[in-house]
View 1 (cartoon, one colour):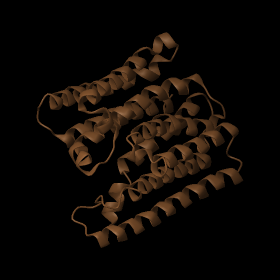
View 2 (view 1 turned 90 degrees about the vertical axis):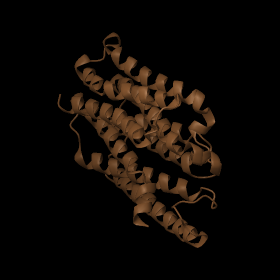
View 3 (view 1 turned 30 degrees about the horizontal axis):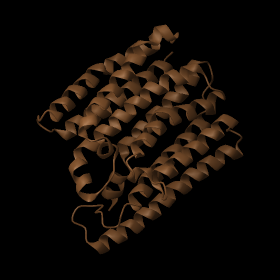
Length: 291
């Protein structure tokens, strides 16, 4: 049961969330704002626990007939759903405690308050009926905005207190890469999703549309980074992201090969997609923190 809970918590999403949150604090550090360890840690705990709760709630509210673990009986399924609900509530409580501590220590400001409310509403819409966008085929859009935009923005505002153009330029390409990564994650389960009636972004778009949209998202992200000098964005902060470009190129080529009838090595493709997104975020984070 523990392994199933861990799998449904999406550890890779939590890791990418922590990385993008650290990026936001790194931008504040680059701009000369000393990073307060307490508010950084509490904010990180709040957003990770909130993301974990949303992932578990989304699984809980799936139709009861849909299997959650291989070979389970109806009784095992119901017992597992109860455990799932309990752990989701525990994660939500942990997030609430972290946010309350931030409030009591006066570590929040108006901008951070607004983003925390937005993050909560986004993940409620993602996981909980009546909207439950995770089951309507739009959950990937919500998660991409949460990972690529809201998390770095929240970490930045907790430290810096007001918006800055560096934040906007950094988060938009990352959000595009996050959406491309999440779209790739839909491909291995496409046949099963169709069979069980699950709606994902891929089933909404269909293969024929999803592949060129994926390529556009990846190319647009790196073209935006390449436009940094024209947007008065420091080139010494941007150029390291192009070390991730070979991963992005192989990712697009491999997906195109699969779409053309080639060998389906899904684990390899999803690893490439996570590497493209994660490595880009890591290189940006490193650039901001060491300067």
